[in-house]
Length: 265
Ligand SMILES: [Zn+2]
Ligand SMILES: [Zn+2]
Image (cartoon, rainbow, N blue to C red; front, side, top):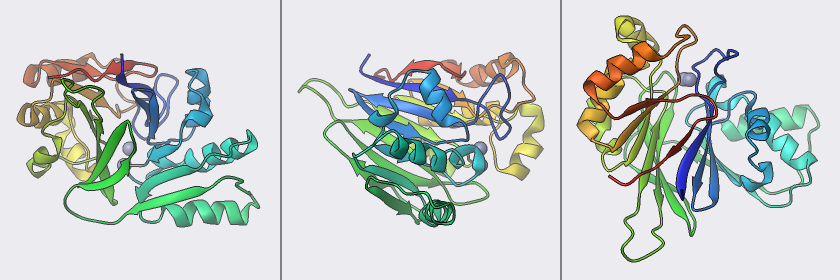
């Protein structure tokens, strides 16, 4: 398995004993990217035996707490554990000010180079990371605060090896204008906060239902759909799986600790 994501947290805003809030570690031919960083992410990293210091790139979709509040603690722990390698945080505008304010007011010193790439655009794909293993392009999605999806593309290892793509969109409302950003993904990860009977609530809160997420997948045609950001009200996700897979059959519901491979279409 050369390209896969490990789900650290698959829950929506409220952490429960069953689901922690949003975070994943994406592994692309050995290069690791942290994707969102909810409160408790550093504990999840330890529990799942990911080496903390192997993470040098952090992508933050938006600044809601269930995607971002784990970052100051994580960065601080990296320093306490003797980090010398730089860390780059790709996040919506404002993240740098939040982190620097916390560190300044709390007298927290970071002994390694901490770089921020702040996203402040409302259309198009923008390259936010490239390295010998992968590229990452960000694009705006639709939520109550500036929010971005990410398209992670591996750099093929051989001539006949097609580059696989993992696309992550969390959190967003339903809008078919987002489909072009999702097209070309082998694995598409979408949020799925609610079941279909709560479509009104989903619209108000700018989230997706299971059926809406699957409809976006049906239009974008990835090989596989991965649904995450599950509301705490669903103790068993079978209802969400039934609703989504009726529209897009190759659907998986994320669970904490699950590892999902990016397989070629
Ligand atoms: Zn969220
Ligand atoms: Zn949100």
